[in-house]
Amino acid sequence: MRKLAPVITLLGLLMVAANSIAAQNACSKEVDGKKVDFKVVNNTSKPFVVNFVDHKCKEGSSNRQIAAGGTTDIFGYNGHVFRVREVGTNNLLKEIVANPSNPAQIIIGSATPNNATAKGPAAKPQPNTVGNQPATGPTYWLPTVQRTPTVTNYTYNVRVPDYMVSWVLQQTERGGGQTVAKTINGKPYTFVQQGFTWDTNGSSPARTGQIRIDDKRERWRSNLWKDNSKLKDDRTVIAALDSAALPNPSTPWREVDLLVLRAEGSQPPNLKFSEAVPLVDQVKANQLKLAEKTRAGSYFPDMQVPVDLAAFRNGMLKLGNLGRNNPDYRKGNRYASNFGGSDAVTDRGREKVFKSNPSAPYFKELTLDPKLNEACQFQAEYQATIGRSTHDGPRNYNGVNLSTFDLRLKHFAPNIGTAGEGAGGPAAAFDFPENWMKSETHYRPWFSIGADVRTVGLGAAKGRDGKWYFCMIGGTAAP
Image (tube, rainbow, N blue to C red; front, side):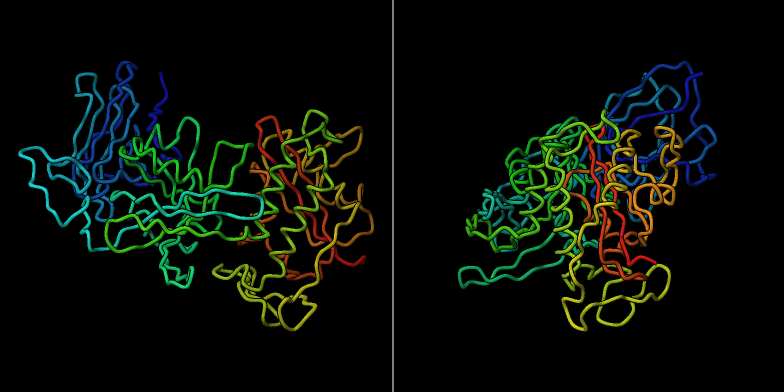
């Protein structure tokens, strides 16, 4: 019997049998194993989700919203059941039982959404409006970005389409939707900040109309995907987004923290200005460059490491120290958001902060420990071999048991006190140590919380999947 495994082509959709729904009758059944593909069109004025109902009548909980006017593709089998629910109210809009005789396109709702084309006689054009927004009201504009190693040039000339405005204004814990005031060339401007991530391959916006709002502080935890078929044809918008993202040849994924210009009226503001590239971004760009040239790993030759591994490590260390000496680096985090006192509130309660100075910058810069580097390099390469991050290791590496952190530490760096090990990946070449430092769990060594961390060991390796894997160990004074 074929397993119940419908596929909804919305990248990142998690179909989890979460809610038992007794009010509806239909449950998924296996009929004859015939595939049934169809589209669901949102012809309502509000977003909805499409949930799968399994053979035990448990309804999944989709986190993928289909915007008004949007369309999604469903790939299921004869007898599979899907429920369409309105976002916010959870009202059941329709229950769909997949059947080969069903129409290829199922339209939900009769109202014409704001961004859909209405049937019937064409409305008379209103001289005062552009799209769905009044010409005298606010409009939002994306920048076209051109980069040099030290300067970024911005030209705000791409209008945010109406269907995308709500995405830009979405409030998130990363600060998305918040306004930022800037004075440029002596004139005040208002921007809205928002973070986005998208694929440039099979699930690219040009093919699927999908893009993710990065709503979580730790970007990789975000799963707020937006979907609108109009984005597929909006090549100007897609090009602007691509220009704003930092190029990363090691992955098809792009991510960006945008400042979207808020303006009055419909005329392009054509705001142009240049800014020095922040040192953090310069270091990240150099990490990508260093990652392009690789050699065989030292411990696992089938894996790849940067040819200039020392420079790559120094780049990681530089990113770590830039964050370590920025007193506002974790501002907005739930834990350890303020280092002004003698201790910090962490996920374990209150812990001592080992500061070097009573005022910012609070800490001395970390330095690399050669022995801890080797312990970390071994673990980074091992993670690359298995394609995931872990604190476990091989039980037999050339006759040596290196299966635990303590055993690896004893082997590579005996008599060195540590504050634990951080494991990371799969990721892009520039994602770490930032992902640790901005997390709610692995930040401690970087800010000397709970231990007087003075040195670090760092390792990096690229796996067969083309992704990068990382390790860090925080070093303290010898016991």
